[in-house]
Length: 367
Image 1 (cartoon, rainbow, N blue to C red):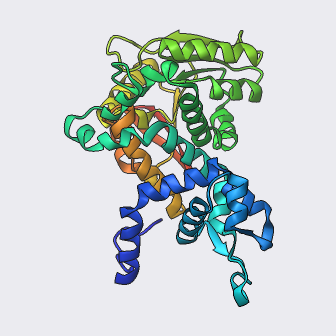
Image 2: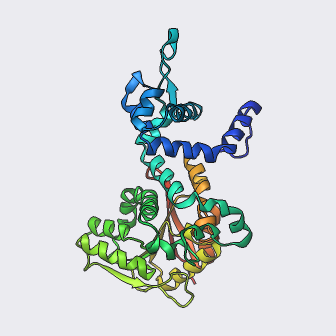
Image 3: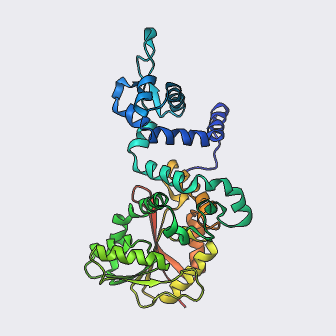
């Protein structure tokens, strides 16, 4: 667990961290330019010899002035470093790839997060203050339209934005599926209600895992239409059915009679009050032996500070872009909200997958 009570950082280091935050929008755009212009890749491919300003300029098709400005910022960000013999005896300064630069080129999580922030969040983040004051995703207006949430807007977003959103969404849920599947199927469920099934990734994974299971996806009509296509393409059209509707609609009830209900990375998409309402619907649809599974990344259950930081930052995406009312939750507050809806925690599994997901199993509260 990460200790947030300590404040042991030296003053000089705290000041440095403060300057990184102060200049972070420029730093972000510098990294974007180094990626888009092929600077990072070119320096990485050059190995220990590195590239000079002139070589960077020629590869990126920019001026030496521009190459120098980017390369020097790359040094400050530790994306780049000076080659060992750089500048010796009048020699030309050369730049090689640093460890942080390597992560921007090769680490999937870093790439997914960066593209998501760049394509989905960056321009709308200017409206964070408005979103906080008014309780709505004010930043969503940068994409046009009169949507109340990003989920209503998904089918209308530009293709590049849509791709970055789905890459982000799938990366943070799919990676825990292999460890979650044996736990969910330990009791041998034959029918599962997938609440907020999105593109049918989980439903397809279940059908591939068990030849006996069938699933019903409950989601917005636009999402179920896409899920239906994906299920058919995977060869599971006969085992994955659709139940179109708004999960938050008070008049929508969940299908009953299933062995299990499943919610993957859905609770963070709504407020805690709405989480309680969804749990109430799940309890109404569940029998005494029905398992209700919740798969979520909980920021206070992370092993690594980078993971917790990412989740804390993602909360601000929900504030200014997604819906204006939800966030990534702590274990205790999410558990309390779900139990308020008539379910009771039966079992908790933490640290699933490389992103430390938590799989919570609930049952209907007796009586």
